[in-house]
Image 1 (cartoon, one colour):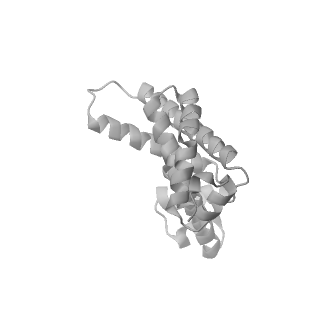
Image 2 (tube, one colour):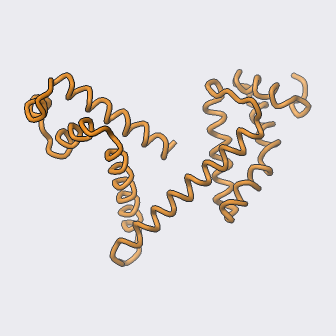
Image 3 (cartoon, rainbow, N blue to C red):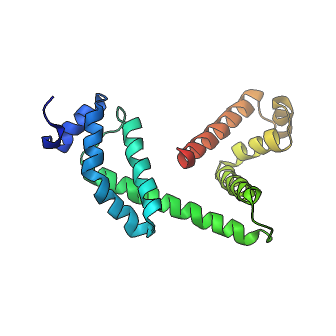
Length: 182
């Protein structure tokens, strides 16, 4: 194979889609510093910027067969900015949760409690965004632990409709969790 460092971004992307690790390595080498600069400009934290850039590039590798990119530099720059904003939002929400919690001795359980509270608040927000009937069915199912038949009777809808609402709610929650963890 010819030296990959002489190839255009489009040629590298074509090789990347084929699973060529040398193409990925060249993309990493070619864009690392530039993306690190973008990440650092927003975070003002070198370690956080490095982690974000690494995650963006790793996501590019994992999604290499699915992603369609016109301009590699623009795509990666936008991905880093989006990831930075997501990280800043997550940190802001954690800070808000910490501020609401009573002061206790700091230990690993505190961090676990904060993480659990963040996740609960996040999921509550996702549940609140569901359509009204879907949200109500989900709450009856998970909160009050009613059966499909009990929910159907209470809401005067068919058990199949109840099942459909639960499926929709769970799919929405799953996609939302994938968005924050992957």
